[in-house]
Image (cartoon, rainbow, N blue to C red; front, side):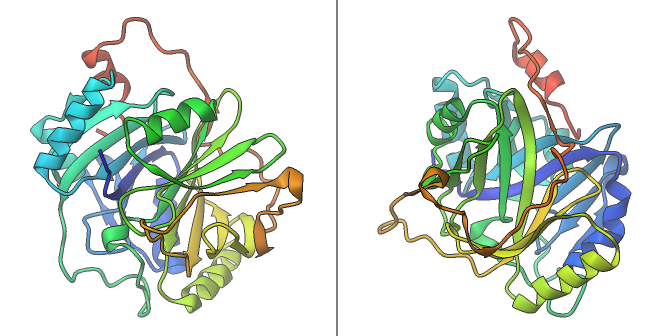
Length: 323
């Protein structure tokens, strides 16, 4: 299958209320209340792009991947099943909660919940943002990107480029405790919708990226993040691979949040994967992006052993996050 784009992300956390101020004031996003005490964060006309669910600990709840229509979705579910992935068709109430017309879900080899969907609720022309210039690169490129920590990069790449059908844009050898990092793209021009980085024995959400259309939005967000005392996970800088100019903060919900500008667009017919190696002197940045020592994100946890003889009912209960 070819996934169209990354459509939404769900996170559980005890710190979701701080997004009521963080989203509009720092980033120019919008926040709405959702059932069950959750918050939905918007940066375009979709019902939401980030769902924040109240919980006792910080944890990635789910990633939602968009396909073009119901026919493509059914075909994708069949392909995953044929690849021995346990796929569950969502109940109508689960579709309603996610604000989508059609929905299936499954787990990756490390227990992360993934959802494939089509027909997300859209409010055409409603998004205004937290400030007058708020405008983000979404549309056919999806919400932006997410980076996951995985315990086994080879197993992760096999799964995401195999049954899930993502393609490789770049590979980097980061060095230190992280090993290799892979940047994978969906069927759209965004350089990567998913990044994978290895940490032995660990899994979780490392960061989420949104891309603004306005360079001044980067500067305003940077100033306001400092004003309200958000921990800076990385200074301003420009990456080599996707050429993104950005900075990162550690959010009250545990994961890092990157706001970027001016990423490259991938031409599917001419792009070839690049490999960068820190052992050969590569530093990973055109300039900047000096990373702070904030410790491991609290959304990253040790991998729990898989329960024996898990069936569809066990999968439904174990990956129910946010419902």
